[in-house]
Image (cartoon, rainbow, N blue to C red; front, side, top):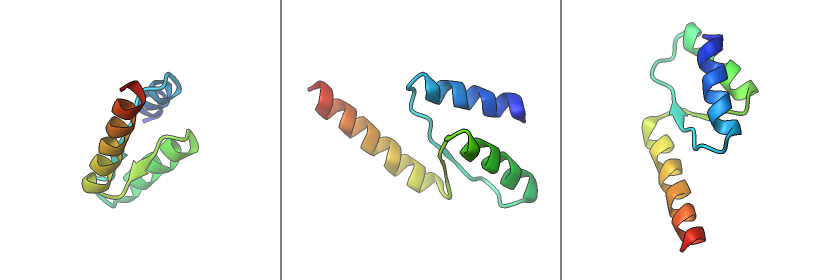
Length: 66
């Protein structure tokens, strides 16, 4: 689990958009989400919210480059 968290954190540190969401609500996922959030990787409660944020990032990027 820690190597996966490290991988997502490295992507975010390099400025890559990282958008994750919860898939279940079990205790193992709780620990994974906690570790991701401690590394400042956002985890959204639903895929819909995550995609909304990803869309906003894309819109902002297009506006800035445009």
